[in-house]
Length: 315
Image 1 (tube, rainbow, N blue to C red):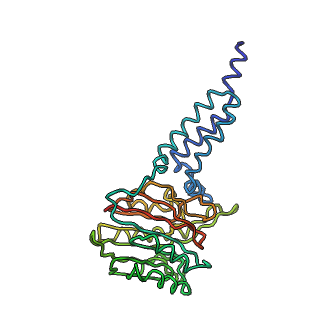
Image 2: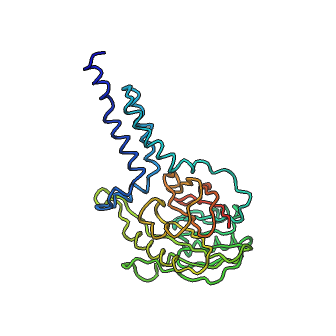
Image 3: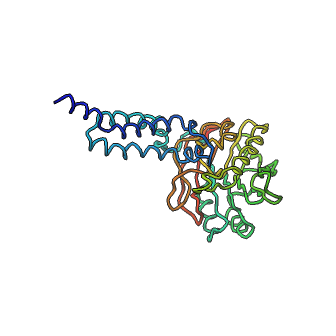
């Protein structure tokens, strides 16, 4: 092999290698991407697990060009993805010492079959069921279907909580962004009197975000609402806390840091919940404090554009 030919071989796949290294760096350090303009950093973090697809996509040209350089460079994103998300692939069965199961579901304010959705949620046997986008016309269907197994429930605005155990201290949690008027009630707090002791339960629905070519990720209201929810959680006097809600982003998104930084690590399982027809992200969350989520999973579709998610919790 001539020196010139050997040099060309060493240069094979340089672009592929650089792209692989870039994917690895973004996986490990997404905070390096600024949020201005257009909250690009938050957008990346929302779909961060999907960045792992760069490995098989880039592996094809690396192998076709027989580039050792490019193939070796892909080890960085592969290892980074495995370290960050590999554990989520192995949810296993319900832990034997799990004491509590909860279900979280944005039922959609245009759900064409609220009664069927309510029956499906009742069939889960969960200890707590949290709902968002609960409209006045749909409320009777849920009250009727859940009454037998969930004698205790509370609603505030468009969020609701059904419980097998007594609920006390029910109150509205005001998470309205400053430019939103009265009547926008999407947060509640209650104390569930469980056999394991009192647990503070929060149900929240943060504002939606919009993605567009001109605005990028429009999440200003969502971020403002997350900060208000974080203040309420920080002031919570009970040690044990469960937060159930449609937070309109994944927990990797820095916009949810005021909330996620106050709670324990989420449990194993991707449990993608949105959109229901082709889920690509879990924007419906179950978070705890002084408790452990042992498993999270998506449930079958209802008449909503979100999938319900269920989580097992150990106190």
